[in-house]
Image (cartoon, rainbow, N blue to C red; front, side):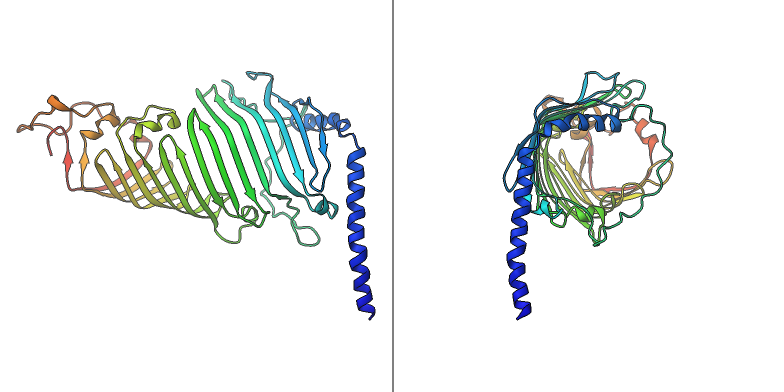
Length: 401
């Protein structure tokens, strides 16, 4: 009987305590002017980065069981030598979280929204980067020791907040390197990341552009906790449309944060190779439709294996296995390839030439040479060592075979 009475008391008292905590939290939120914390936030940002953080708009609080905080007109100053005064400009930022879990010390963020972010990353001719942050008077720190495992709290649980949705809209990221003469720009029309918590898978959708080439990506990824403390290979499945190419990647990564233990099936198809020019940042010859598929295993820092490689371009085909060893001074490529047909004439555009058409085609004559006297572009070959075994059933070139 006593146990039953105790349970009744608990069932009555606990909900009352929860209600009291929620009402108290709402009362505090409603009576607090959060704008008074803006100078403190700016001061802490200055201490951490050496830059000026300006919050032009008011910190607005929405009161409900899922309260929200939003702010408009946020900027972070650029390096003194930068191209513009601001490194980061944000039109609006909003975060919404569940109130009841917060009363028990659980951070359950329902939604984070970022609109109109404009981020400039730049490197000047001296090699200085505006994203190298240093607080005023800060000295060079010694090399950091090897990372230690993150200690759990007393109850054994890691203090990882639950973030259920992240939305980024109408934003832009620009990278310029004056020293290398490089410039890249990515525009985000929409980026949505959904998940039910650190132990649940992630779904991702991206629509935007890279160097003015439209990009669309969908991805299904493993749980965030598996990135921090992996207990099994991390699953990856994504599809990407860019520069007219359809790219599919599916498989697992044993150590995702280190990029080790790749086991991925990769395929690429497209109707016109030349459409990749915008994405590549360089002129790509228009050689028509193309396709490629392979299984990628290994570690990018040591060795990669392309197993069951198959490729087709401009009527030519190639298949086989390729191993790229990256441990030495120069990469070493070991490839065993075969082909049913290599059409050198059709592939001439890859070297700046063009396939003869119409009246230009002439029948082969005795003594005709398959390859011209033009010097071969071998400069790039000096950057790697290679062993190649190639078996072709037929090679066509300017009417000869």
